[in-house]
Each structure stands twice: as structure tokens, then as C-alpha cells.
Image 1: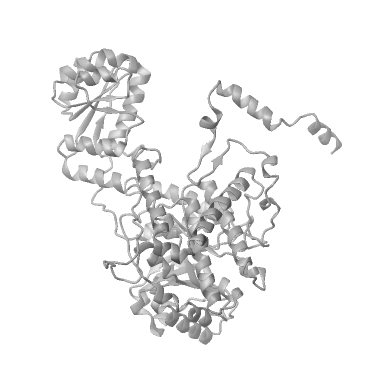
Image 2: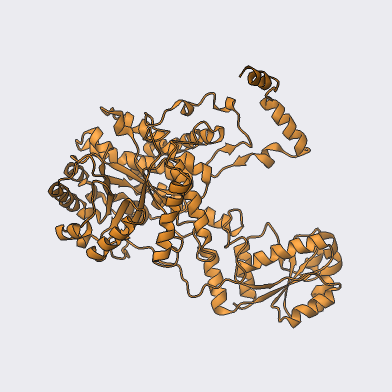
Length: 617
């Protein structure tokens, strides 16, 4: 041991300034802030490296698992979470049959989406037949107006079965404000039944009945900090209303459950769940509960649909897998992995099996359930946790200044904020500032939609909502939808052929041909790459022989002055002519009549729409 200590003392740890000096040398004069500091969508900067000294003023590293403020999770001895699958109930007996089947395949949490018209004793008896509710978590989503009735039926059922009230775990996901937020529907009359619902289930301490469905914001494109800040305000609105109605604060807080989304930002999502528990604990603490246990935040996480794609849909497995990992490492209570085919069809047995196995993989093979908060002490994640908490708290305080969540939603400020983010993200995707693998970047050149169409959103109440409502709504479309609509339209109308006329500098022509193929294939164009041509005439003749609708000249910036105009003139309008790049001689090329250019600063979506229009598609 003495020798080892002596060995370690021979190495002097470099200071932060020494690291910065070394980086400055390696950057060779480039701006450190522009090249290496990441300005996040969440409103704060992320440095390229962190050291222990960066955590000197943070309190989160001192927290312990299972102790207030629960930043490191609600458990002390493990990181076990419930593996949940949701079932849409049309026929209670068939739903029960499916539930029993998946309980034998790794599921230990069930989510029944039950139309209000089916709520009855017979339905509950049929649904829960042979399901042991003191072992399996059971959750219900139904019409808010039928939730008290459902709660009373469940209490009677649990009592008849003789279950230990402490062992019954689950929820009724009563959240009328979701319809106000997402649809603009006036739900204020329904809010008054919350105390009755809580009262009905008060003897079941682990069965929650008031939900905050902020996953709806996630699936509408909200940034992580927006979902977090608004979720906290949403939960606080319910807590305030319950305590104002005379419900004991401990009971009220223990009745609330959060259903949150998980996006693709791996480390940021881990930090989000840590920050969420920290802030919620602080909020509940202000109501002066008798027990710190009331300050625990119970979170069911659902992987996002916002970033899922119709084309190259197996990539959705990669997205949801990293999202599931974030949720697990973030110590959630339960998790739903959205099947990869959700954008275009009702989940199949295969896609549901894969979704289950994605959780079982990280649980049984990677042992994510063994270690409590493994990210604790990570300089980077501790910084993200603190930064997200800071920015989310600003949103929370802003909402409170507007009179609380309900008042802010009625005023439309929350909907405006989320809608603005959705518009921005679609714009960023159009410009490839936000990547969607297989959609706006590196699409599968040969893939066809094969009749797949984007699936309309469903409603657990079982009916479409086409009414006009008094408040603003949130407009939600998947990030890939614009590109998918364009690609399907091209496929169904006419698929043009784009020919790469590669000439000149080998490295540049290959790089630009690859870029152009990826660019044009985003609209479903057939692309033909080439090894290179000795003359532009040879290249144009080959393009015409291939019956090309578009000829893309791919060369270096310097050589475009030599090749572009002769190629354009020789083509003589027999196909659309495109220059790959934005060369210094662009004005000269434009003067010669060349008007089409594709490069990294293009709005890919708008450019492709323009090309479709020119081609009569």
C-alpha cells in the first residue's frame, strides 16, 4: 500500500487552466466558445470537460438514495422498476387473456386503457380475473368523469379478494387537465371530483389516482426543460386544489403520479428524472407534510413517439433503447417502451415482444436494476441535474406568477410555448440542424412505404374529438412527418432519377456525390452515383442514357468554374441541372443561368419541395 501511495504521488494533477491552455494550443486559434461549448436547447451551456471543482457549490452530490430530497431515487437497496405494457380494452375478456399472456413474458405492470362506457363491476371482474393485484401493478386510464365510479369498484374488488392494502400498487390516471392543455377543452367542472377520488382510495397508500401526463408535452415536441418545468407546475396545481378542498397534504401528495416522456438526449434525460425528484420534493415540502415520504415523486416513463419514424422504422428500436436506458438509470418507478411500429400501425405481437424485451435486456443482462443511481458523482451529470433544475424552476416560477398552471393554460401561454418549440424543431429538422437518422439524414435509398401511412392518434375514451373548444390547443406532429409526407407523395406520383456527374478532384467529387445522394433520397428520389467522368460531355451523355430527370455536378469549388457552365450548356435543358456546393463562383454560374444548388446551409425540405414542383410531381 505504501508503495502504491508513493507511486501516485509522482503524478501531479493538471489544473483546469493547464487543460484550457492545452486546448487553446490544439485549437490553433479557433474560438473555444464556438468550437467546443455546446449551447443546449434547454437554455444553458455545456462545457467540453468538467472537474471536481465544478461541483464544489452543488448540494446534489451529498444526497443519499432513498432520502429527502430523493434526487438519487426513492429506493436504498436496488434500482428495480416495473416493466409495464399498456392494453387498449375493447373486450374485457380478450384484454384479460392478453394480460395473462404477457405476465408470463416478463411484464409485471399492466396499463388498461378503458373507455368510460365500459366501466362496471363486470368489466373489472373480467379484466382482473386470475391477476394477483398484490403482486402485479395495475393501472387504469379511463374517462375522467367515470374515474370515481371505477375507484369505488376497484376498492370493493380488492376488499373482496382480501388483498393487503399496502401491497396493492397501481393507479387510476385521472388527469382532466390534459384535455385542457392538449385540446383546449374546458374541464373545470370535472376538477371538482378530485377530493372524492382521493377519498375513495385513501386506504390504499400505494395506489395513486391523480396523474400528471407531461408525456403529452414530450410527444408534442417540448424540450426537456419545458416538460420538466410544466410538469412540476401541473402537479402543484393538483396539489393546491386538493389541499384547498381540505384533503390532508400527505394524502394529497401521495395520490399524485407523474407520467413523463423520455427523449433521445441520453445524459440529459437521466439528469431530468433526478432534477424532477429534487424539485418536486422541495415543492411538496412547502406544504409542510407530516412525513418526508409524501415528498417522493412516482414516475412512469414512456419512450417518445415524437422522434419515431415511418421509414427505416427499425431505427426506432435504437431510439427507444437509449431512452429506456436513460429512464432506468434515472431511477423511474415504471416504464413503457413504445413499439417501433407505433407511427403507422397498431402494435403487432412481434413489435410488442421486442418492446418488452428491450426493458428485460437492460434489466436481466445489463443489470440496470442492481445499482442505485450509478450516475451519482459524475461531474457531467451532476452539472446537468443542477442546470436543468435551475432552468425548470424558472419556468415553474413563471407559471406561478401567471396564477398557476390552470390559469396559464387558460391564457394559452403554455400552449404557445410548446407550439413554438414544435415549429422550431420542425424547422431545424428541415435544415438538418436536428438529425433524424433514416429520414432527413442517411435515408435508405431503396426503401418504399409499401402502403404504410401515419397512424392517427387514438383516445382512451373511445371517440373522436371534433368539437370547437374555448381555449388554445397544442398542435402535435411527429418530427419526421413533413419528410415522410413528401417522400410518400413522390413515391405515389412519380419517382425522379438523379444522376451524379462526378468529375475532377477525387476526394471532393466523392464527398459531394455522397452528400447529394443523401440529400435527394430524403424525398424518395432514385439516385445514381458514379466513379467519375473524364469530360462533362461524357457525364451528360451517360445521364441522358440513364433517363435522368436531374443531373448533379459534383466536383471541387475551384473546378466548378471550369466544368459547371459547359456541362449546363451541353445538357441544354434536357434535365434539371444542380450544382453540389456553394462555390465562390456561384454568381458567375447564376449569371449563366444555373439556378439550383444544394449544400449544407440549404433548407433540405423546402429545396426538395421546390424540386418536386419544378419536376411536376
